[in-house]
Image (cartoon, rainbow, N blue to C red; front, top):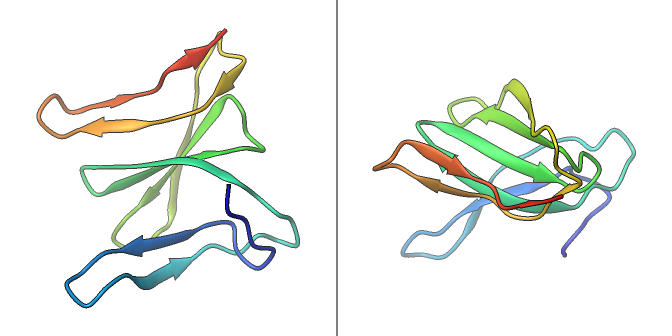
Length: 95
């Protein structure tokens, strides 16, 4: 997993000219590892290693924090995926 002390995570977008940095989130002096990202309906869902049972949701318009989602009964969240057709976020859970 790629980490950097200066940012919580970096969101990249791929274009014809290649990826470019869009936004960084301050880490407040901590190192964080991102286990997964998913996009759905202008919301960025983030699995961070330090929050093993939580999904952090940010707006993709201005990257403000919208909410935290707690997955009850899970020991560890390791991946995330989104489906625009079904309007669902999928998270495999280890119990």
